[in-house]
Image 1 (cartoon, helix red, strand yellow):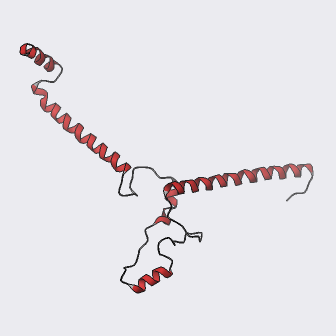
Image 2 (cartoon, rainbow, N blue to C red):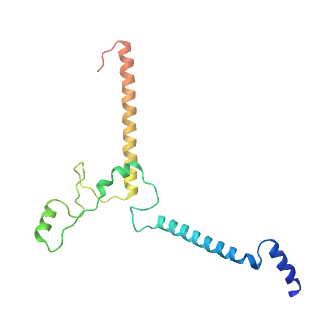
Image 3 (cartoon, one colour):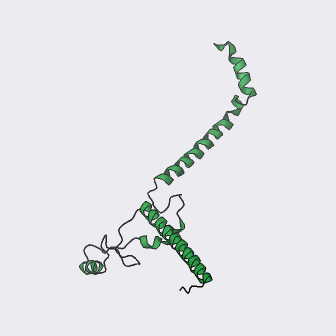
Length: 149
């Protein structure tokens, strides 16, 4: 079993794995361990961040523009009767937040918001197409001599 030991040592020394190279490989191992630990932590943080506002995922422009609608509301101290009554009168209790268009907003998740934004874009494109087709028809009728407004 130990007959090939000197040959094995010579081979390992030739490929850079001898006793004098152990410090280098130890440092390399530490560096790789630290690097992969940091990368794994960043990946885990991105998937399960307790801070919902600081994940590494990019947010669409429309969601950034509407961020002011989702600001945290300040609730009054429970023992302060006057502040609680004023808070309820202003419509600040849960589930009764009035949006900028005057309707009651429920707490929407990001998927529902994405669907709403897609529907809004679809409606805008449909209106553009409708007006373009209408204008073409009006132009053709005017070329034929009909008066159309």
